[in-house]
Length: 187
Image (tube, rainbow, N blue to C red; front, side):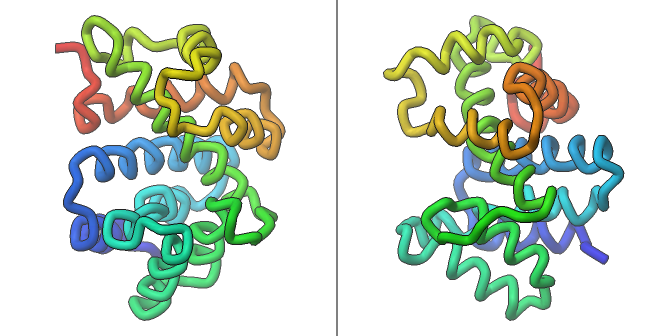
């Protein structure tokens, strides 16, 4: 059984950046929503979303992230399933994504970050102002949120077997449920 509080404590132990913590919360929300949709273990999927980048602030290089995190998770008793999902979210690890959990994490990671970026440029800086159409429009703007891989967003939806617009809309709705925690609620 995954303990959400323990996962949060681990995240905050290694991650001081508010924006990276919010990213973890956004991915967690998406993962939990997909777990419900797929009748999977919501606590497990949520913890994977919450912890996928917990080591990034201390170990940001491709030589260390997510490898160091996997070692730490193993030391702390996290399962192979959790560690494998987190390792597979980075293409450069060479680990094929096989399970629905692994595919969903990959599909939600970059997209959650991009949706956040879109919300932040809206007049009210709110997820209520974001829809799939506005996200797709911003995806075409190469200068906008240039560090976010559009190819990964598209590939993630394809790996999940869902239409891109449906995936975007689903992630937006999931993130809206915690908009206040993300600082993206209408004021």
